[in-house]
Structures are given as C-alpha cells and as structure tokens.
Length: 433
Image 1 (cartoon, rainbow, N blue to C red):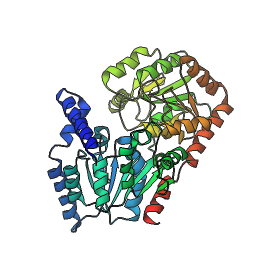
Image 2: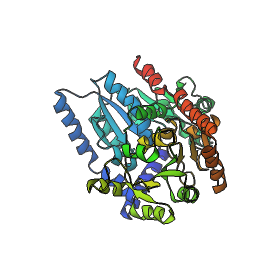
Image 3: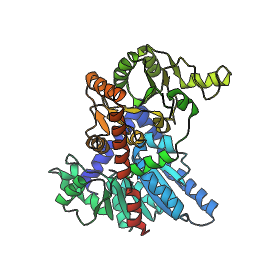
Image 4: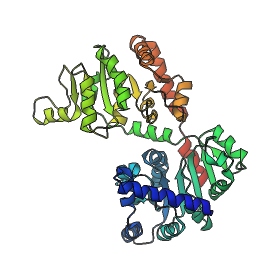
C-alpha cells in the first residue's frame, strides 16, 4: 500500500492505544485482545493440526463486528455441511463481535484481525495459510488484501454495499481504489453499489446478489426457541389474545415514546428487551412505567422458589422486561407488532429479525443508511416515526384495524422471503455447487 495509507493506519492504531490508556473500554479490549496475537494464533492452529492429524486447510471469514459476522454465517454453515474437510478461521476487528462470538462452535479458530501493517499481515498469513478469504460488507484493509492478492489467495467481498460518500468515489479516491483490485469478485447488495463501482472502472468483477442477512434471519426463525412464558403472557395463537408489542434493542428515547402510550392503553401488553440491560437503564425503564411489570430475572426467581408455576407469569403483569440476553430473535414471534430501537440515536438495530415472523415493524428516524429498512418501507411492512404523534397514529391503526395489521405483517414477511437466496448464489459462484 502507499505511504499515506500506512501513515494513516499507524495514526489510527496509535489513537486506539491512547484511548485504551485513558480507560476507553472498547479500545482497551481491542488492545488487550491483540497482545501476543501471533503466539496465541500459532497455538490455536497447532491445536487444530493435532486434532486433525494433518495440516489444516483454512477458509477465512473476516467481519468487522457482530452484525457482519451474522451476514457471513450462512456461508460458514453451508461450508461446514458441504465441505467438511475445510477448517474455518473467523476474525473480527471489533470487540463487539469477538467478545460475543469468541466461543462460536462453527469456527475452528477465532481471533482478532491483527493491525493492518505489512509485517503483521505477512506473519498472520504465514501462520494460517488460508486457501480462500471472504471479507464481509465493507472491510477494506489495504495491506492484508494486498498480501492475499500477492499470494494468489482468492478473496471475495460478500454482501458488499457502496455509497457515494465513501472515499472510493471522492476526488482523492484514486489512491484508495487499488484496494478493490485485490478482490477476485465483489458480491454486492444492490444496483446502486454496482453502478457506483462501474463509474470507477469496476464492472467486470461485480455481481448483485443481495444481502445474506435475509438468509440468516430465516435460519434463525426456523431454529427459534419456544418460550412458554412468552406464549402465556401474549396469549400466543389464542382467539382472544391481547394486542402485544415487542420492543427490541430499545434506548431511552425509544422507551419514552413506547411507555407513554403503553401506560395509557390497558388493553395492550408489552415485552421490552432493552439494548442495554445494566441496572441503571432497567431502573430508568421502571421509573417510567405506571402499569404492573416483571423483570425476566425476577420471573425466574419466582419459578425457582415455587411461587409461580414454571413457564407462567402472575396474572396482573402487563409488561415483561427482558433483563437478560439471548432471547430477542425468538421472542419476536409472540408479537403483533415490533418496535426496533436505535432510530433516535446511533441508528436502528436489526429489523429483519422481527419482519421474518410476518409482523410489521416500527422504527425511528435514523434509518436512512439501512437498506433493509428502506426496503420494508417500500414494501409497506416497515413504518418510520419521527415523533410521539407518528408512533401513536401508527400503533393505534394497528390496534384498531385488524386487516391493516394483517396486511402489513404479510408485506413484511414477504419482503424477507423475496430477499433471500444471496448465500446460495455466492456459494455457487465461488464453489460451483
């Protein structure tokens, strides 16, 4: 890579180290996770070799964080099923991916991506010797991609998405564009990405395949856990069930809107799974509630003490706060409508996890950068709000008009089903079957 790139990369990584020194939690995890990375990676590879009794043959998947990992996961699982002789190497850049999936059973080796400096890239590839590499969505580390290219390792971008604001398409893009030449093929999500790449001369190695997240959420739906307590609470599949809203990955601004309406409507029930489950946040939610609630952790305690039959809730409970992780993607099945948090702040969370169950989804105004949210809006299965008034109008419509609710749910489910198939298209293009 060019000198300017390497200067910029070194400055960036120095910034991470300085942030770690001053106590930034995420930066500290990034620094600690990369300490002695080469010796630890060597030990992991040696362990795999010993278990196999031969040299491992790695296919490498790299994801920035958890969301990108989930996009790559359908390909990993297809490889496991169809080519069991290959081993899977999974790397992450961010701790928000690594810390959650460091024990993922579908990969043989899981580690942080080393800093993108030439010597470290060479050392990394010397240790793992990948036969094929997949980078997910928008990971463009110049030195590692260049090193893969020089070694003749077929490298693919999957679920890629490109926007006009990216550096490749700016006046200074000439020094960044060579990075794209290191990919054998770019599998992109949409026509806009293909068009933008064509404007800078990349049109022969680009295919529109859609987003592998659609395949992932369908797989999650098919493997979803059954929660008798959620079914009991929501009256799941009963004729006279109450209207049930599931709010997932909510933040305080989302909760202000949701809880104000909920407090005034005794005919509805609420399952609230906040994005942050630390005590301060949960207490903040409780302070806004004016109707009977129960925390998931309290519910478990009632079961353990025999005060309530396991799988049941006290009759008077109207709101269930999920102060634990690992439930949300399965709980959406019990909703009439889902609210997806984050849209009044950092950006909305995963709308597809809810839409796959054939229910309409509501989300805040910060959704413009999320292609699937825009698609749901166009399909009339997703409903953006910018105010309390917007939310009240939409939720009231769904609570009072059964046909509108049913049609919006069908639209959402159909949008997910029609968006599936990207993983199989990529798999066939790369492996031929």
